[in-house]
Length: 78
Image (cartoon, rainbow, N blue to C red; front, side):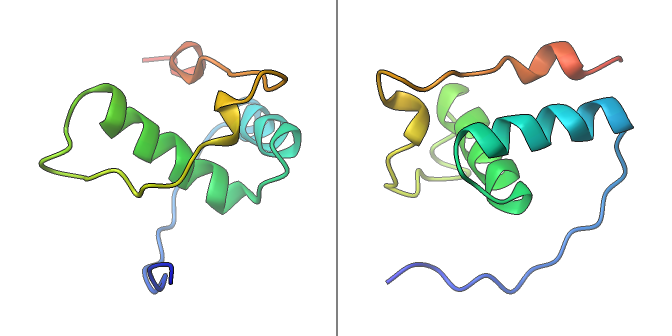
């Protein structure tokens, strides 16, 4: 059974970043909320912060042969 989602986060982003997020979510058939969750989990997995945020155990669709991954770091303007 998956973890119940009860927390709400409000955030602001530029229209350009939102569009990048929307495109990535669409390619992976995810909601915007789920895409953000996957990206955040991926960050912690990649940075080896398993002690802070253990992997959910879910397989990312980005690992399939036909998926396209995106570099979200280029979207950050500083």
